[in-house]
Image (cartoon, rainbow, N blue to C red; front, side, top):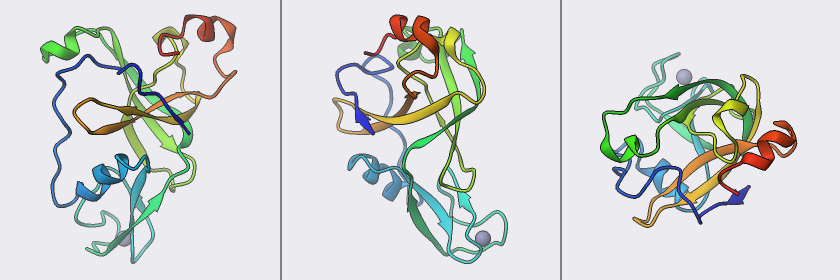
Length: 160
Ligand code: ZN
């Protein structure tokens, strides 16, 4: 895993992620550069984002798995309009669904950085990087695994 704190994907001014009783541990772990995924303590299914109850078996008991941060681009879209004025400065940006390889197929919403949007494709191998925001909350982003997008993408990558 690499840290990439010199440049944020979105300009300053984006709202902080909302923390609640279910997600507080998750966001605190991000600030330790650890990506945690909830796992049902009864049936073992992983779930993201954190929720109070297992959607498979109904248990309220859970523990946490720490992901290695590798996965694939499960799906994505390119936003060309944004209702948020700060995000609008970044258009067009990608919104990516990442399937983690070591958490039972858990899907995370994030962004793929370090390559142009035109290099994105389903199944693209990606790895976790951390974005350390000035407001103190580290965020998980993903970048293509080196060599997976070809030379054109690596030359045009905006985050390196
Ligand atoms: Zn369960």
